[in-house]
Length: 109
Image (tube, rainbow, N blue to C red; front, side):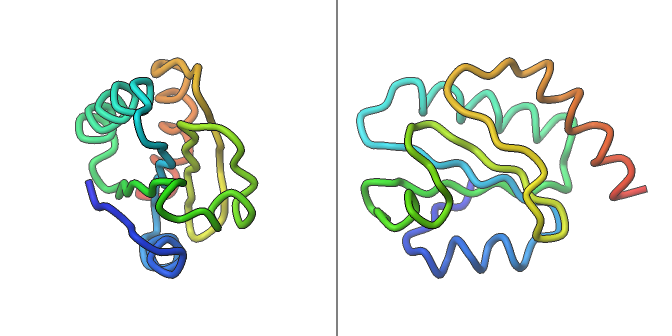
């Protein structure tokens, strides 16, 4: 997974990837680490054309204001530079996969 270190890198990531998942984490967040690994596995298995990148809100504090993120982990899914879904903390991977599958298949097929 790509690690983003500035707001400009985050914006470029969204701009340059037709299917993107932006994962916003925080330092010393165990949930962030566990959920990130599981989401990476789901994307790798079921949605290989989707790119994923991580940005740490402590390292890029402007993320909170720019993307209205107030808790970690939060992840946002973009298709064609438009936000498709936003999830945080307590997310089920099966419902996420179901939601993603519909638009992913339409977008890439």
